[in-house]
Image 1 (cartoon, rainbow, N blue to C red):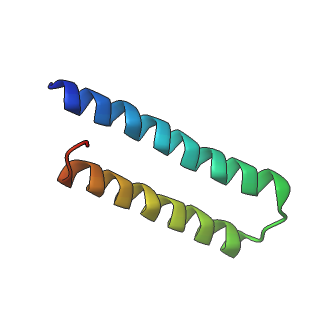
Image 2: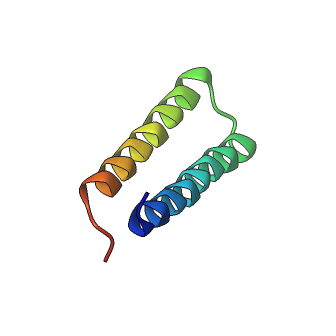
Length: 61
């Protein structure tokens, strides 16, 4: 694994952790029904997918 790939992996772990923290924040501070909760999970997972795709298709600057 190259240095750039290791750095990307660490960055992805940090970003994904932050996205998980967003969910935790929302869950603990807002009363949401199941539909709303599912939508939030779906959108945050979509965000993770986009971040991952960008990281795989792009070089670090």
